[in-house]
Length: 410
Image 1 (cartoon, one colour):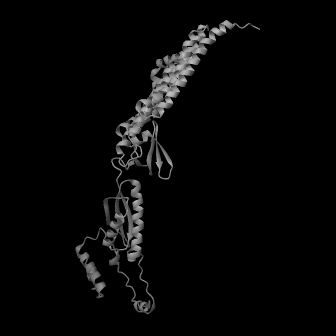
Image 2 (cartoon, rainbow, N blue to C red):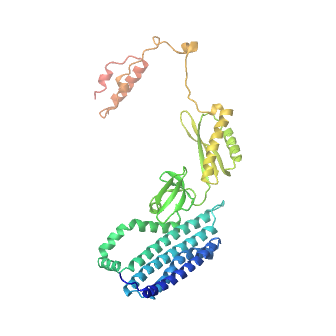
Image 3 (cartoon, rainbow, N blue to C red):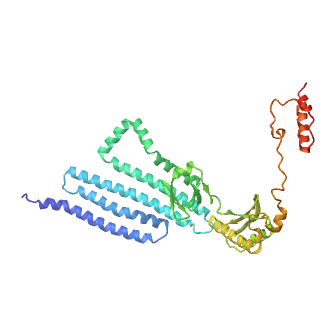
């Protein structure tokens, strides 16, 4: 059994032990600072709380890297250990930058509250902050991973080989990364132009919902029945969609009724005004009743009302429709649609209805009455004679023989 060189082991262990002890104490101190700063709602406190957590991991790694140099280990071992510790430090630095960007985003969101009545400007700021924050964080992560990978000699050689065939590799990478960069560019476009914002009411692919979340790759639409529709960011740039809260949340709502022609429209308008004035969801702008269409049985009445937002507009439409039907049923039942039919029966029916045997026989139409004009019928004398024959046949007069045959003579 080989003899252990305790002096060499001690010389290698004590610098590492001291570095770990100092790193542990620094880590405890930084985590304590992070907990205290996390309770404050100030910009510097949020940034400090975000940075101190990665720093609590990075500083002990730095202390270990310096302690390894003081050990009597072989140079190759020292270089390999320092490389791994450097990778850890780079990862912590990337993590710290991402968390700092997130802290700035949180501070912007706290200063612009959306739980107020007029939150249009706040939602605009929230959308820009979240989309830009996600995009910058993604770029920082990609850059950090690239820097870490470039520290490995083997990967550097692969990179040099790829640069030698940059043309083909660029085309392949471009096609492969097109969806990723497409969504990234679409996110920047949405942040700048803002066709959608957080909490916007939209119609996407026939679904009504609200913008619940905007990430760097997709948008989450919360459907009215609690479903979630996941839509890529690029879809909102390339396809048309409805945004009901683009410039204002105010909305017009319609309720259609199909009523009888005897409906008193003045009473309908007065009742619609009373319904709107008694409902808190009406914003006082529009309250109109109009006849917009008619057919052979009913007329279409449109009740147009306005509300502060789409949710109130939908509920107000339902209330107007329900209360108006109840009003017409109680006060004007003749206004409800009905199917009219003339039912004949009894003594009156027998007097009005003639027996089939007493009905005069139907006259058989003549050929002239059913004949369509042909292209060769161009003789004016023949046309005049045919009109005369038609008149005589309707009047029951005898037709003059010979005239019909002489009409074609020149």
